[in-house]
Image (cartoon, rainbow, N blue to C red; front, side, top):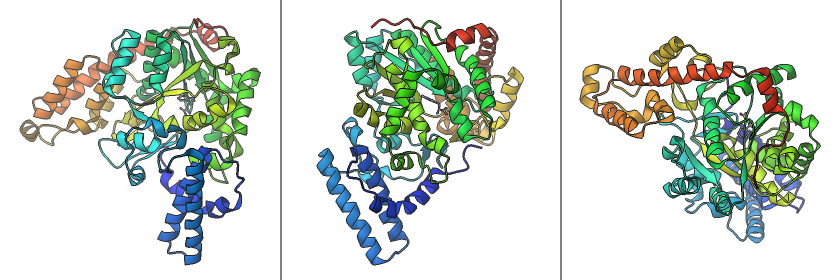
Length: 494
Ligand code: TRP
């Protein structure tokens, strides 16, 4: 199960241990990001010492070091240190709240763990402040509409892709006929993909269509081998199986390259060159700070972030971009992947590449409620892409958390709560018609629509969607997979 290691606890252990580290190994060659990470750690150390009522001399020494780091930081960046607001991204956040806001401690979000105690789900506005990204405001959605000439995707209209980095810069360039490319990925941890896994791919396909640009999709079979109890062969097989589901989303074979790390890393000198450049510019301290790695994590995990970063740079794909390193990358992904790309953006200018832009999505909630995301390792928390119409119906009726009242009478009288109702949440992802969705919300809230009726609408939305997916997946032959997964030129005008 994915959620067994709450991030906050893991980080605390690391950070307390780090105390001597921070004092001991100062090299004087920190980047702003590195200094920022040290400050985060030292702030935590001071808090830990206070909580533990530590010796006054120790506490004073830790506070002195914290102050010194703050002075260094101000000198280096010209800005005051603020927890939750990394240096290179500071300008992207118009209204940073006070630092205390950033350290809310309630929601836990990292690439391996998502949980919150709030039934409405993670507080995404707070996450934007904590991660230092920018909110996708209505102006940006309007601008995407204007530049692409297409009605914005429902994921944009409904705040599902809610956060971004540098989207305006990508659009500025695009308007001046400077193209960009898309990069997204998937960690193939099993054969079974669920509907939540489709979100980034559905959206990426839309971006590919409306902007008419190439796309690379990384299948991190190496990552899953390092993190899970699986063999290299199993992970690679899952990568190929998952590629079928991804292809079934309708990507244009002339504009899409899908690759398994286990295959492509060994076959592409250019990709590996970027990996080592990134590795040279990230310290162990940084990955500890960003990802919570500990001294007992295997070294494969510690260096893996460089592998997820490398596709953000166009010269990792010479067959597609002919060795050019200046083509900007846009990464649509769920917000839990952001730590990888904060690191990537910090490194990019230091190795002479443009920073990738990002569009972040919210999580797809588990059937049981928005406290966690849907997980492939729990059959009852997910609707799988292989489920039959009957399974879909039963799972929704049996497990989808309801915001309705206990009895029909009470429901009619007081109405239901759409904000915590999982069936309603799923409809916001999959029901295309805005007016119909709004009417459902109103009727549910007023009590005119009962939970059973709401679930029926969802069942009737998902059943055809998933059968059509299954039909398209069946059409994907070995030959098609080979085509998508062969390094080759893509249609690209720039
Ligand atoms: N680490 C991701 C996962 O476990 C897979 C991934 C690799 C990815 N590169 C990406 C996801 C780029 C989004 C964007 O699912």
